[in-house]
Image (cartoon, rainbow, N blue to C red; front, side):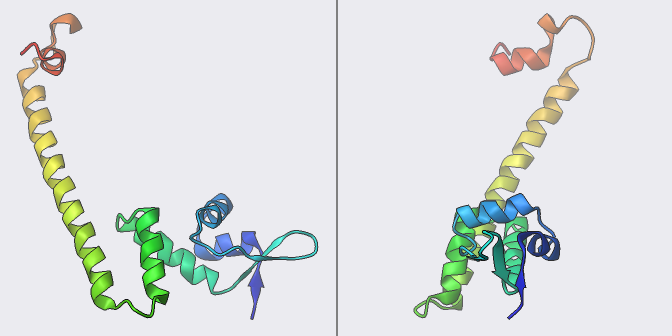
Length: 134
């Protein structure tokens, strides 16, 4: 089995070396073997694991949730339904966030509309609204 230095691993997975170290500290990557010199040597399969972590983060999963997903992969008592439930929960979370973002956009759009952009900031309707004066 080919082994990679931390730099080679980071390059192959298109992440920063510090990211590799961080994921290792957080337990998302197993502690690698070390050479007599102390340098880390990672199995080539670690590239796949880093790509899994990276794609999961892009979908909004937290590092804790990613650790749970990784654990499901090796848990003989879990099934695809367990993974699906976690994905559905993440989707529901994203939908809630989108609803909140739409609400914030409407409120900010109204504030911007109500402000003529003239006069001193002490009389700004946006600041007044944020202070609860309007």
